[in-house]
Length: 250
Image (tube, rainbow, N blue to C red; front, side, top):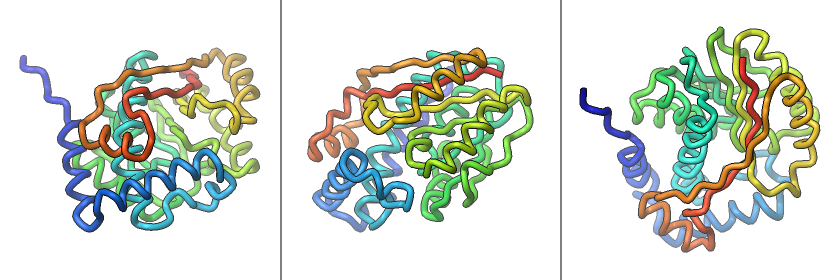
């Protein structure tokens, strides 16, 4: 039987056509530099949706962070064996443009439900799922109150938890810890840098107490040429991808 072709390269090419038709390369590069500065130096603006303000930042988010987050989550899912036993559905909390839920769903043969507070992100996730040939939907909502899918299922929060207000993060924490009792496995992914992750150690202890694990991932990725060019132009290294994760099996 012939192996199914990887849809990732075609998705990245389609992203270029979707987001570059009205913006020049310098405009997208400037948007990516603004995003990078926001994540590192002005994190207080993130809970209010600062990452997706303006067409340049939205295009940069889709064209750079979408593909790199897809590659990272796919590597993590493979490393953890999270696709087996096969979940029927993946709930992607704070889905953004949909790369995390899509990466897990493609590995596992599952459907996807994306939840995000941004209408733009919801529409982008719908487009991503369609372009990758995945079953699923996306809707606008608060991640901490999203309904968990019926078992067997998975929940992923990739680069999302740290952007929540403390009260919302506490509510989500309680729900994720209880999810495995309902047959739902949990994956949390955040950047390697620990400076802003003031809550991380508490979550590590709690996940470990429920049979979970913490991991660090460093991936030397062969990213598409368009993604590499954009990253280097903005002063980033798109070939050295990294993340830390928390995993809680059902």
